[in-house]
Image 1 (spheres, rainbow, N blue to C red):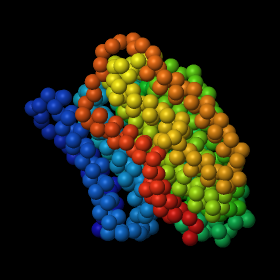
Image 2 (image 1 turned 90 degrees about the vertical axis):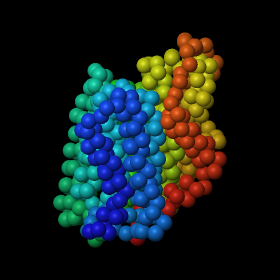
Image 3 (image 1 turned 180 degrees about the vertical axis):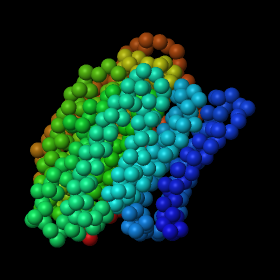
Image 4 (image 1 turned 135 degrees about the vertical axis):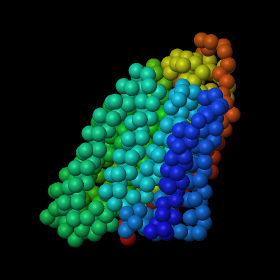
Length: 493
């Protein structure tokens, strides 16, 4: 048991720091709230730091295996997401310093919920049992529902309620799919489900397809793909900018991580996967097209990034379709391309959202029109946002270009050329609204000439995120190798 707890250390470190923050909040304080807020940020940063260091120590000692009766796996897949989630969390915490004052006395709860949610996401990526997956998913979701409404204004309250109600329906659908899988196979362990399917293909195949459809529908909400995307623009607009940043990258990464675990460890059989590979491809095409077309008409930067995330989720689904359609070759290239895309997208979208956090905190506006002439008011912010938008479009030499090139190549190798053509057309469409904002910042006259000051913490988070966008675009090999190592875990044994 102690050995199992050691392997779960990166998750426990996050939970421990979150608990410490909540306990500290009950103690009497003599300092004013702004000073406490700065101290809270530094304490919260101990969470991702401790989690990453613990994961690094385990990796250095080549610690691998399963724990808790095979329910949790410590493998390359888990290590990849341990470091990814720690980096995302640290960036969001640093970027929150300029905005956290708006949470007033709820700052401790804000930081604690970020830590609890991230810990649950990491546990979700490491889970190999349907029961633990569902528990981790609900722990993640509950934290996110509260975070969406933590600012306590009318828009945040509406975002939180919408997210809660729609999320509850999605959780119920996922639970139906899991219950059906358990009823058909007699086990909740992913490897046990795969073994049972391999020995009883013919009689249960239609029911397994139904179970897979339920899971696709439920996780489709978590991944924010059409037709389960209706919550995204409203929640992104209503929630605070730091929460929107966290939802756009961490939540999406966790959702795709668990989908990779379930569909390519529990349901790897070709006779079954052929039934839903087309579903992934169609959902990818519709998500990319709907997200980009609806983004063209947006006047609010957070709603635009919400629809953009729907379109980007379609790109992720291209990789899932490639895995399903390509057999062993699809598994080798498709899975690693999805994992690589998750990391590249995290760096890119965090860069964009950190700028939105800075502008929103100082101006109180999320209107795209207010970004006109931003280069004259805050040249570093404008340059960083322009680079992020170029990366989201998929223009070299950025992380977004390499990510799209890799994922499109995996689809071509899986004979999904038609899907790649649709994806390329959508990339061209996305350039209209991404580059429109970039041109506004450099060409148009600003509405106001007042500067937009930013904290050192936000500048550090933005500098690291932008550096990652450039580094991945120029030197993608280290991340590509890490993604391939993580994807190798999913290959059929």
